[in-house]
Image 1 (cartoon, one colour):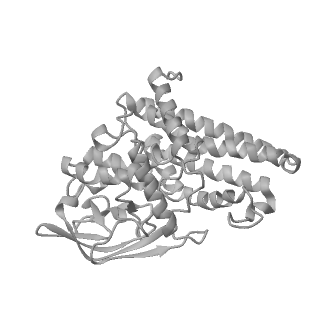
Image 2 (cartoon, helix red, strand yellow; image 1 turned 180 degrees about the vertical axis):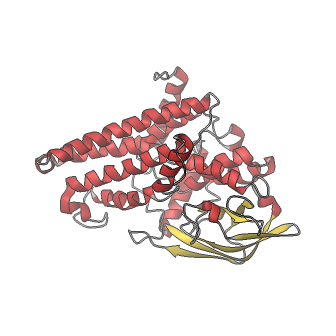
Image 3 (cartoon, one colour; image 1 turned 30 degrees about the horizontal axis):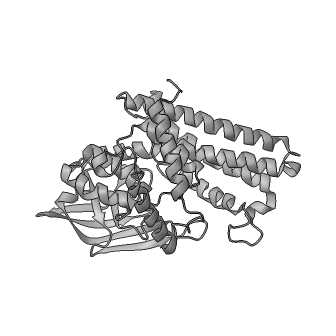
Length: 388
């Protein structure tokens, strides 16, 4: 792998850095887990799209730049370096978008991708169910085909961004006689459809970052099926590969957190330096963030040359989720009791965001497939070990 950037890649970095310097809001946006913040982040998605930075790997005709994954990583580095807002439509642009590119019809691509890029359509993920969390083969929500549409019934839970999202993508059991991963269909559902009920679920910080979605005789046209009837498992596994392996968590996110962690340690060295283990934890966090970056560049290089992401995506998922937890646990150790202050507390100063990050990081080993499930995948599919 050549770690030197080409002139074209350097030019892209310079263009992205200049645009972000001129356009990133001076003040942080409100949390997108609030109605006000959701609207602010939707407007930011539209602004990104105006500069054709919404999703740089998309084709030009869909509002992208036709960049490869190496160029995407370069843009992400500049994005996080600039302190740009978090992406409220990450379920759409990073997960569903690439899946549509692979499995969608031309009509579906033209219908959904441009609206996704502008923030006109914000997407929620509707996979997990009360009896089927990481085990998506246990899906029980039903899709009954009636003429030119499906009738959906069932319940989804832990649906990220669903409280104010416009659409959801999920898998439903379209063959009532099927078992496990057979007989599932991947369906796109407008959340304002009659019969859809969205019930917010509060996170550790008290904000509704998730929701339950109830489907009661919801009619969805056949044209909203992605990848064909009964092929939902195959399509969903492709989406899960994007989620676990590369697109959902760019290494720049952790590089920036590691840089801030080093600064936090240096600012509090008079107290944190009394415990040598804290300094060692900071160093490990920085090194792990760099290791994840190099591994991601290697994976991206493989994909650019026509390779595929396989069960290796599970190793990525475990690494970035546990890295995120380690970063924030180390920050809590540095801050001591100050680390318990919420961002809105008068005495929090500039350290309150560490608690927000710490609380969110706890979910990292659960969403996108629990780390226990990922270790099973690694054992069975990469190491050839027998099922327990």
